[in-house]
Amino acid sequence: MRHIIPISGKDSLATAIVQRQRDPYLDYEYLFNPTGKELPETIEWLKLVEVYLDKPILFIGRDMKKIPEYIKGFRPSHYARYCTRKCKIEPMEAHYDSEATIYYGLRADEPERIGYIAKENRN
Image (cartoon, rainbow, N blue to C red; front, top):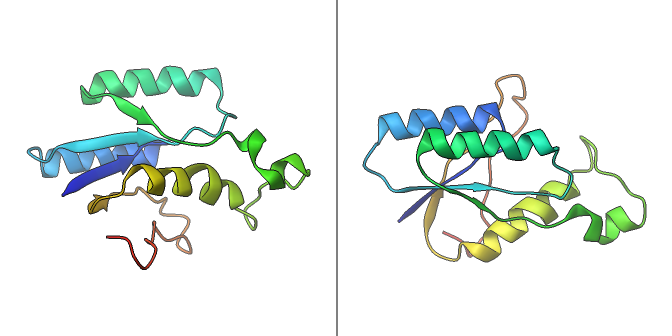
């Protein structure tokens, strides 16, 4: 089984660090879901994370500027999170087609958020 940890910020990085300490023998796969709107310092930070984790981070995502909703002027918000689904989840699902455990770091001050829930036919 694959063990995947998406890294996008401090909460998910903390998850990666904790999981690596907790189960150091698992072969974790780290990924980042670019949307095309990242600041240059985000990419620099990810390079530092790769050095710290001693493993490459795979970039899997979709450019937000190519999504029909964005092209039509509909911008993502807390209530309209289409960018998460279209730029991050769908590209990840297309890339990982085998059984996997995905580890997420969710912020403690966002109790209403839930982690990734696979489609019915996904493991």
